[in-house]
Image (tube, rainbow, N blue to C red; front, side):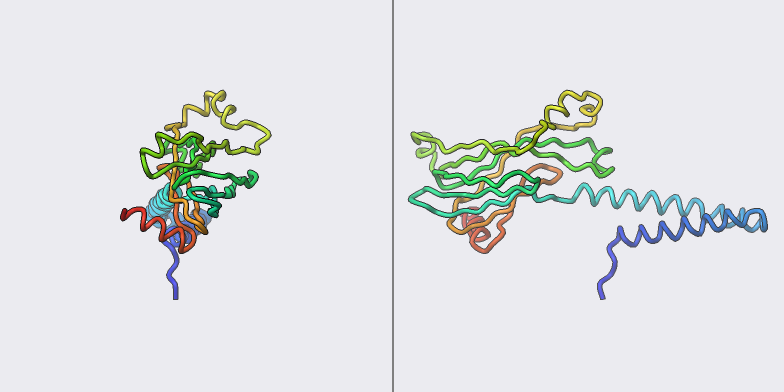
Amino acid sequence: MALPELDTLLLVTSGVCLLLSALVILQIRRRPLRTCCLSLVLVPLTGAVVVLTQDVISYRLLAEEEQVAKVFVAQSGDQRFDIVLDRFNGGPSQRFTLNGDQWMLEGRVLRWQLPMARMGLQNLVRLSRVSGRYQSLEQERNQTQRSVYAVESGELVDSWQWLGDFKPLRRWVEVDFGNAVFAPLQDGAVYAVYLGRSGLFLKGENPIAIKALQDWSSS
């Protein structure tokens, strides 16, 4: 039998403590002395449990990661690949042809200050560019035609510009920075791109991608 998670257990305990506190307060006229004694114990206990619950849940929010995109790779020639970028924010899927040994996805990340993050506000990301890159520095320097593309936002309103213009909200932004992830171009590989507290990161989604990352890290 699976045990309940800590935050679920604390939420239930908080609810029970709040209910008991309310019942004790309702009895204060009928049994003032006994009720006051119970209140001296129950009210601080309830407050402590509620604060602890909020703290645990806020740290869980900080640790949560959100999948923002998926990348599918298919080889079409020597150091030439077609990739499909599927985004999870409602943007259109896009297909790109990349030259090189690796694909790179760039974006801009906005991270909220800790108090706002602990209230549940997630980091924001705006994916901006996809490009191919070579493992060899010589090939990278001597390439005659770079394969680099803009990622379509698909947004009717530029929310990033709105955030920049709205100064009262900007004061709660901890940092606004460029971020990128890159991984091997391997025929049949599927990668997932995530946004966490520290920025973008990726994982292999199928055995081909997982092996490509393992071979890459050991090379």
